[in-house]
Length: 113
Length: 445
Image (cartoon, rainbow over all chains, first blue to last red; front, side, top):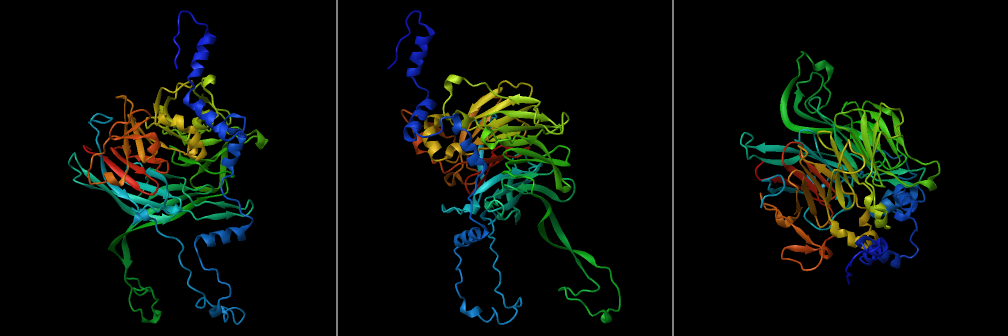
């Protein structure tokens, strides 16, 4: 719904008319505030967004937690009590020949394929 | 239909990477960079790997030459690490690769993840020694008593082998995440920038670096802005710029003081306060800053636009190009799906007449500064027949959608082109989609 500007109009009236046509950005802001009424009052979310940005990355409890998570990602079988290895543990000092071959975990990039 | 730059017609040349849609996270391309001659093209990915392609040119003497980029070397640059003090993972993702100008037969590049920068030497070996006195050909040592005469080992030709070896590791200098590295024109130093600090290194020295910018507030609660990108001036070795999340660029002169917290120039476009919204600051955050080759201008990329700044004019950019203005009415959903935080890069062509940047739906945009023309092109497998000319694309913002146009709501926001690179001399471009690298060439090169 548009209104015609007739004759001389005060700047306030012009501003009112312009406000009726809300900028797309402001319209989006209204939408966002409607969905998340608790969003930070400061523009740009203030330092919350920045602090989230600075501390990116998942926090782990400790290095054990990290290594477990990595192992799960690679779907490795976690040995509970490997029967075939019992003679290695405790029986004698293992030599390189006794240890399983360490598989290379690094896969080549598909760009080089 | 002539594109920007007069008769430039972009054609498909090559595509690298897997075809299947199931993308492994490690294969996500995180950086693309040509070396100074354009002969080599390096990519880095989320899995910490670097792949280098080398250009092979057919019919070099003819004006319409065809070139092809083939795998030259690939290596694992960075591996995932665990920060024991903070209990945080350090990603192996390669954030940036920067080539050093070539000084001898070998090539050198700097690659960085969030915390550690590495200098890699890539060298060719096409000869091997034969005829050792003390060793057999298979490497076993001879019984010295059987050696009756001496001979001089000779170098015989062998199949070309390209080796990459880490020559320097620049570690433990960044508390926050490294977003940029930039080699100085003096060829001796380089800078690395994280969210709050910029450090200056000497390429030969790994156990020391100088802090040249520190914007960390005494109280982190007062944090209002972070460093988003930094670059050295291409010719003036004392000058560098850094951009911020608030849309400002600071130019610093290292001759002025040891710590460049006080800028020499501050580039900022005044904002109309009545237009300010919740999104204003987020979309004004600069995701990339690049000097022009001639060193007179710099280009910045924020969420919706590309701006060209004259280094002599701080109060506003000389040119502004809208990349995807139709997204302004989608900011709410783009905030919800985090796309509003996507960091697009931008690049100049060799003679600074055209600039390029990526967008969504695997679209990328080119702006011809002189001819005031722009074009939207798409990197997709459908347009990948050899030398197929790319058809310009158009997004329909609203209202009636014409044939061949795409409506804003049909755009795929998971298909983002964040990294693009332009050959330093020729009209050859490298465009990275999520996990594929497209190489396009001007039909009349």
